[in-house]
Length: 184
Image 1 (cartoon, rainbow, N blue to C red):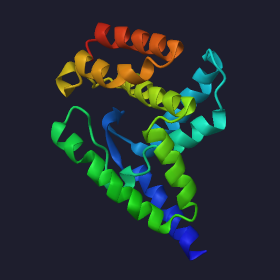
Image 2 (cartoon, helix red, strand yellow; image 1 turned 120 degrees about the horizontal axis):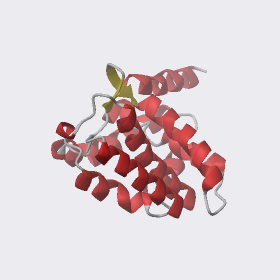
Image 3 (cartoon, one colour; image 1 turned 90 degrees about the horizontal axis):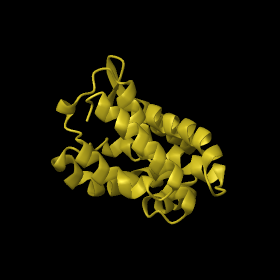
Image 4 (cartoon, rainbow, N blue to C red; image 1 turned 45 degrees about the horizontal axis):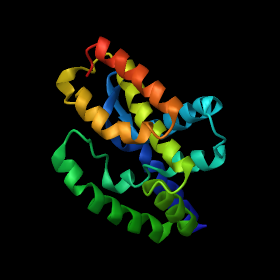
């Protein structure tokens, strides 16, 4: 019971991890981002041209940023943060697996997601990218001055969203809107 309570209280801290994007007058939390990704995935899965296991997609998205409880969020427009990302995340995984009762399952899910070992993990990563585009559309304060240029976003996201025809089309439509609103 003690291990379970420690696990739950530690994982709940994902709500306090700030990301680079805004929600109203505050920063979005990594927990909000994970929830948003799951919601987007649930809707977009109905448009996919191939059958994907919804539960697997949800597992990937539920856990994909849990390491940020200890590693923080690395913004891809910040080269210094990106240099340290892998090392910080590996240490975070070690810490989480030291107390998580289902550590083996957690490691398997995270490993499959990070290495894109399944079509579901590829889809989950595409959704992760799409979520940031949607968040920028909804952020009235987002602008080109934030350092997220069209080229940088395309370089980072295109390899993932292009794995599926529908996510690529959705991404391109979102990018057109971001460009028209001068947010990138």
